[in-house]
Structure formats: C-alpha cells, structure tokens
Image (cartoon, rainbow, N blue to C red; front, side):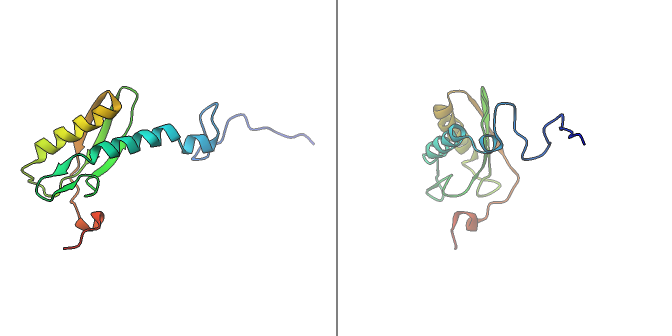
Length: 121
C-alpha cells in the first residue's frame, strides 16, 4: 500500500501564501493598527449640519489599504449634501496625514440610515 501526497495546497479560505500560516493571512496586526489610525484621524471630519464626525455617523464604509495608494469608500447623510465636497476633501487629507501616500475617496450610492450610527429620531 502506498500513500499519495497532494502536490498543491488546497484552495479556499484556509490556503495561505507561501511563508504564512492560515492564521497569519487572516489577521495582520500592522494593517489593523493602520486602519484604526486612519479611523482615529477621520474622527476630526465633522458633518457641519449634524455636528458629529463621519466615523460616529457610520459614513465610512470601507478602508482599502495599499502600499502606494489607498481608497476610502464612504456615503453621505443626504444625496444632495451641500458640504459633500468639503467633507470628501477633509477625509482625503486626514487619511493622507496618517498614510503618507495618495488616498482616493469614493462616494457610494448607498443610503445612510441613522440607525447605523445608533441614532433614533
């Protein structure tokens, strides 16, 4: 009786790049620390109409970190927010102050729900 050995690593969520275990690939402490640092910086961006920051309002939907550029996906509290341009520019500047490279801010067409921010009117 002979044993056969698989020639390739299994595909799927448990497969990890060479030199990394599946646990290392699933959690990157440095990446998470950078995401938190960006979120902390974004707390300085205040929605002038509501008086709360974009993090508390749950307007930041995703932070995609890259080695030379990054992207932040966000929404606005209203589709025709008069402060949209200024808030987008502030988000970009605050994120770039942490990351020290170019950050693209993408507006999503998703509707904001005050319940996402724990607000009930």
